[in-house]
Length: 584
Image: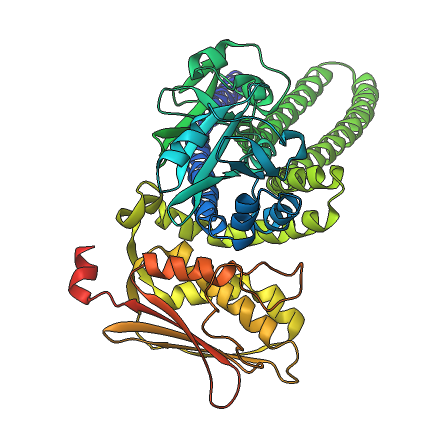
């Protein structure tokens, strides 16, 4: 009896120590969850910001590419002999059909020809025939000058048309004006296929392009204050959360979004991108769920041990009390208590086993949800564009969009390195370019056509980089045009072969040699609208555009027939010296 008091004290002290340890562990778990939430939120927010900047750079690059491509077309169409003849004879019966043959290959929104009085005499949009545009700036500015003129025109429906126009003349006498409307609607539809919201403003801050049509013609501040329809920007603002650790960059009705802005090197334009934080919370919640589940399992084990000690102490107290009673009563009660404890333990074991199964199921569900979240989010974005094409009854383009998505992902790294080229215009946008890399990139883009035809490609490249000063994207466009011509030339060859030879010296020489039938008329080869293809396969603008690009890069594009058969196209460009490359 003398030792019972200190033993009870020791048991009570151990009991309180265990409770204190569990309390401290709970506080540490809460602190760990809080720190994890802050760190992961900051990390994933930075990732979302970086992806938003990449998308903004891609949008700006696509817009500039569309504008630059369309700016070359009026100069070529102004030299078309059939259009000039129609303006001289005032017989426009075949002019509209002539323009229709160009519009699909050029990928323009519309082509329009006006006479010297500003009247529409031929157009791909037949509803505009006969309209008078004499007082429009795209007409009188083009008629007054000798170069291609750009104009932004506000339509009656509230939208904007982006027009390149040029005077058509013969012997110095103006005959009319040719107009090319840039197809920016295709870009806007592509922007609307993702969760981001995009808008483009002119030099005065007026919105001229947007994923939300109701914003056009407003300033950015007025557009954000306006109640929009249920579109991508509406969903983006609704999905924004206030828990983000970084301060919000834009607000709509008290809800925060990530705002990114960049300059478009055209007429003082600026492009703005709004991105949501919804995927950040999903990723963080998935990891926090696993962490909370782990801490919950540890606490459950601790409480289980505490309940075991309590049950054991209860049995000991009952046994000590039973020893003071009669032997028979003590034995009977002890047997009864033991049976009761055994049943209680069985129930407890079953409960713990069930809890462990539920915990394992919850952990597995959270892991599966976390692993599938990113692929499902990516699939939703990819399928949005394909769904739009399928709704428009364009299944072949929907299939090609999947291939373009894969190609774009591979080229995103190259686009980020060329961001500085999109911020400048003309020769200021030139930068050191490795010609070998440009050829490899062009071959990668032509891989599906090459595999379909089973063409043998022979490449001869120097071991060292072959550097020039130019625009890589435009150089790749030239190489792709030459490869396509080589593919067409080898259609009748039993063993189609294309040889690519790259040599470096004071001039960089790139030769593409095919084993086709050769070139019939070398003198007219680079003349606009000269083609040997069947009607519908092309209108003869590819080599003319390629020659113009090479001239802009300071080089020249030539062609000749090979002695052993076939044709050789050669691109000569000034080589970039090592000292100049280092300065660049």
